[in-house]
Amino acid sequence: MEYSANLARLPENVTFPERLRDRVSFDEATQRLTYRGFMTKCTYDELSALSDDIDYHRALEQLFVRTSDEVAPHDCRRMLPAAIGLASVVAVLLILVVVWIVMGRSSGSPQASPSDVTHASSPAR
Image (tube, rainbow, N blue to C red; front, side, top):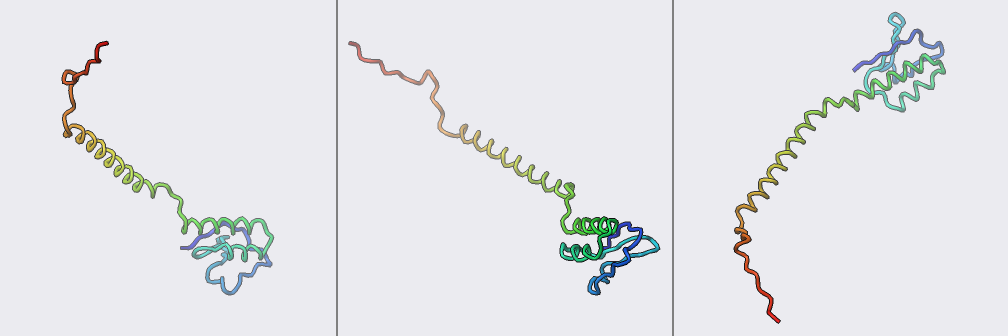
């Protein structure tokens, strides 16, 4: 995946390391700083150390955040179907437990009614 951020000009003293030239570039015509793939913190630090220019740092930070979104998406809508499925399973299990408890009580030995209970009388004194 390729990401880009607005940058009016690349600072004069910035020369990208040879090993990163296939990943990072600046296009003067479109005024865009571009990065290909996931940017590690180590790579961010290396590119950040190339200049103190605030606009360059701002564009670089935007690229770093955008590339990390690819690795760790935080879109809650992706989790919604799983949450609904889990809630459905829990609801069905709860219903089954309630039915099992009710059926167990009704199919067990009949309970004595109050008229069936005999009371022992206390001895007279």
